[in-house]
Amino acid sequence: MSSSRQPFSASDLDRIRAATFVRRVELHNQLGSTNDLALQRAARDTLETPWLVLAERQTRGRGRGSNRWWSAEGSLTFSLVLDTSPSGQAPGPRPQVALAAGLAVCLAIDRQLPDHRPALKWPNDVYLQGRKVCGILIEVPHGKRSRMVIGVGVNVNNSFARAPVEQRRIAVSMRDVTHRWQPRTEVLIELLRQLESLLGTLQSDLPRMIQRCRDYCMLQGKIVQCHSGGRQVQGRCRGMDHDGALVLETDAGVHRCVSGECSLADP
Ligand code: BTN
Image (tube, rainbow, N blue to C red):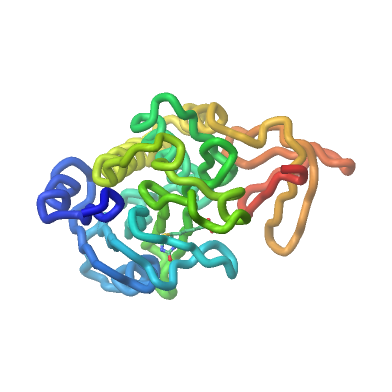
């Protein structure tokens, strides 16, 4: 069996449940989108959370906006349903939970690849060697505002080495940078543990969590375009504010991006 084709086993699922805060795991060989199924699950009143939907392959993976998420064999694609009520796992404001998810991926990759420093592109894209290694799509189910779905795609063993040149320029996998197969279960377990811990820190010590995000921020000092609420603002990134907002110094003064998406003006 080729090393990118090592599927999750029943014992991997047992380990995920035993080692993390996840209560239930469902594994699918193929799904359209793990987020689509997780949004359906999230509508059930009796769902035990955190509920994990894991897929070996997605055929219609979704990215933010109208983007698609290409998840070939060997990538890690999952969606986690969390309870956002005051007694749930993710009671914090959505933009901060989004940051916690991105930081959790950075910390998990850092643990797995100590020689390759990941970087966080606010709010929650993760980059390795200047190319995107992980994307996160957070959604709230219609009519169920007490739940949240965090969809995560990490390029673990899906190599871009033979991908078209435009893709190779922007995307990379953990395997591409190390030239070694990487254990997806370990990456997933570490990511979930970090996420649980950060969701706690977000409640108990927000400045500490924001400081850790700043440590990984790849936009600091760069000219950045931020799209938020139908508006586009360009300015030099002056880091993250106390609440996680991205601070841009623009011609018209200081602008705070609380949520949205951004790109480097001159990548
Ligand atoms: C982005 O960078 O635009 C976000 C990409 C999110 C991809 C993940 S893969 C698992 C989950 N299911 C989806 O359909 N999308 C998310």
